[in-house]
Figure 1 (cartoon, rainbow, N blue to C red):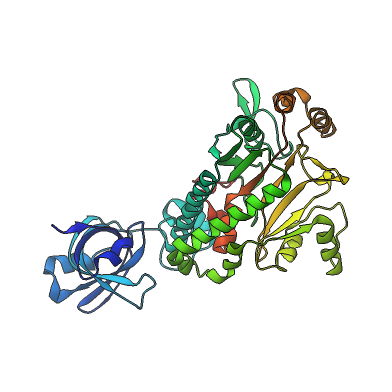
Figure 2: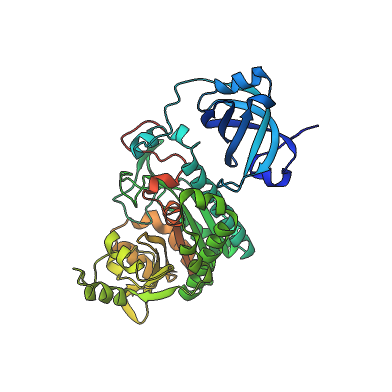
Length: 432
C-alpha cells in the first residue's frame, strides 16, 4: 500500500512511490510537461507531470488547476539539487478536491497593507510560512530551556486591575461594572508564582493601547516572562544569556530551510550562540552616543535610533545596565551604590533591532516598595496584594520579559514586526 507522507519527509522516501495531499501555489507548462509548485503546510516543492506517463484525464485535470487548488497526488520522489528544498515528485496520479478561481494573492509583488488585510490567506505563502515555522521553534526551545532549568509554567490573567508598566497605554474594559484592563504584562502575578514555586515563567498575550504602525510596536503581542526567587540581577543576566544563546542555536539547527526562504544569513546569528554578551552600563552607553555626536544627555531614555547605533557596534546582543530610576517602573530595586539608578538591564539585539528583553532585580523590601508605589502616583490599595509578597516571606528575586515578536523580527531579519505574529490586529481594521 502506498504510504501517505508530508513534503518535509521526502528525503526518507527517495525513489519510492508515495501519496501526498497538497495545495497549488503556482503552475507552468512546457508542452507535454506541467510543473506544479506545491505546498502541504510542512514545506514547498515541485511536482512534475509528463503527458506520456499519465492518463489523458489526469493530464487535463492538471492543466485546469488554479492557484490554491487542493488535491491528492501519487508519485515517486527524486532528488533535485537545483531547488531550495532539494527534492521533487514525479506525479503519476492526481485527484482534485477543490479548484476555485479568483484567489486574491497572485504571484506578484503586493504591498504589506494589502497582504495584512488578507492575512488569513497570506499565511499560506512562503515568507509567512517560514516565519511561523521559526516562531514555533522558538516557542518549543523556550519551553525546553526553562523546563531543563527547573522552572514551572505559570499562567497570568489577561484581565487585571492594576498597571505594572504605567497607566498611559492601558486598554480599559468594563468588567461587570468594575474597571479592568487588558494585561500589559504577567510580571506582577509571576512574582506571586515565584514566591510559591521558586522559579516560574509566564508566556501569553499582552496589550498596549498604541497603533500597530511602527517597526517596533504592536497593539497585541506575546511576552515570555520568567520570575526567580532567591536570584540577584547578575544571576538573572547569566540566565538570559544562556536562554537566548540556546534559542538561536535551536533555530540554526532546525530551520535552515526556512532561513534560506527568508534570505537570512545564518552566520549573522551564530555569534549569539556563543554567549559572551557585553554588559554595558547606561553611563557608558550615554558616553558612546555623545562621542558619536548624538544629542543625548544623561537621564534620557533610548529611542530606536540610539539603540540601533549601540547594537551596530556588536556582533551579538548587548546588555545595557542600570538605568536612571526616572525612566523605569516602580517595582525595581535601587542600586545600593547609586540610588539614582535601578539594578536593571535591557538586551539590545544586533543589526539595529533594538530592545528585545527587559529585566531587573525586584524591590524586596516592603516599606521601600510601598514608598515607590506612592512616588509613582499609583493607588496603594490596588497593590496591597503585591506588597503582601514582601510582607510574608519576602526574598531577593529577579525577573525579565522577552518581547516574542521583536525577537522573531531580529532572528528572521524582518522589516516589519507585524509579520512576526499570526494575526496582527490593526486598530483601524476589523479584519483578522
